[in-house]
Amino acid sequence: MATLCNHWAEDRDVTLITLDSRQADFYALDARVDRISLDLLDAAVSRLAGLPALLKRVARLSLAIESSKPDVVVSFMDKTNILAAFAGSRVGIPVFVCERAHAPSQPLPFPWSILRHFAYRQAARIVVQSKELVQWASGFGGREKVVVIPNPLAPQFAVSGPTASIRDDTIVGVGRLSHEKGFDLLVRAFARARPAHPAWRLVIYGEGPEREALQRLARSLAVEGSFELPGVTQNICAVFSAAGLFVLPSRREGFPNALVEAMASGCAVIAADCLTGPREIITDGEDGVLVAANDVDALALSLTRLMTQPALRTHLGAAAQTGAEKYELGRVAKLWDSTFLSVASGLGNGHSLA
Image 1 (cartoon, rainbow, N blue to C red):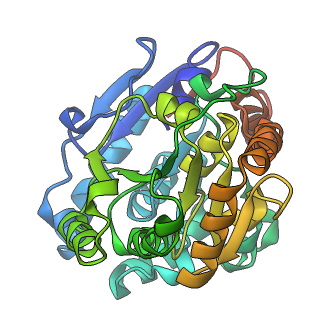
Image 2 (image 1 turned 180 degrees about the vertical axis):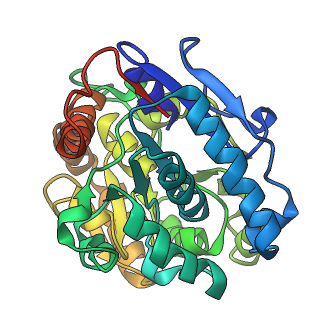
């Protein structure tokens, strides 16, 4: 959202509204983006805390949307999408709801799932990140309402030519330290591949509930000396530019930003062929390697193969960089513009979004 807002702010009025407080902001926003925080993300927002609480959120969001006078509303995340669709309908502004994960495998609680059924039917478009989700999304009003738009690369990852040929003997993972990201599988695979390659290290960037479990697993597999969990970094671009390998071991994904960012940085990549995402980004054996999801043996074999062959890593990294070009910000922004114009004409320069 920050990347798109900053891009759109170059020639449009853009307002970014969040239910959370602005103290939770992580990504930098262009000074031209009007930032509104409703500070409504208390403990009750994760569940349907009664009709009055729901109506309060819809009313507050409706007022915020109406005050910014946008031509369109773009909403991210499932529950926020529901609130935004109802709020947009209330004030007569088209809403584009965007699913950011593999929704069929992450069902909403019963009250929210019913609300989504009605809310998404009121949306102007349903935007998904993968072709594999088109059929699911079509259930909310037909195929004509569904658009596939991937996440854009942030400007610092713009593909700009050859990258450094000398890279560290480091395997990098990036993401929330949670079960669906599959980092336990990566630690196990690394433990199997490392004896033949003792100089290699595994570094996983991110935070989450699995931190202690991953540390215990590394100790039990006797790889703790070659394993690091440095937490969140503000300079992941430099990490990808120096890494020997990037691995995405996820059990499921929506659209794996880190995978595309690593590819744009010229890093050789291995990804689990999990539900949605990697198989639409990587052509196996050409610009990366796909392995069966949840398969430690297959992942260990691919790690060993690439750790052993630096020339292959260089080849895959160069091809990955070329493959990432279609995710550059300008190209993805054109997909958004076409989608806006398919709903209402005249949303060119000078118009506004929220």
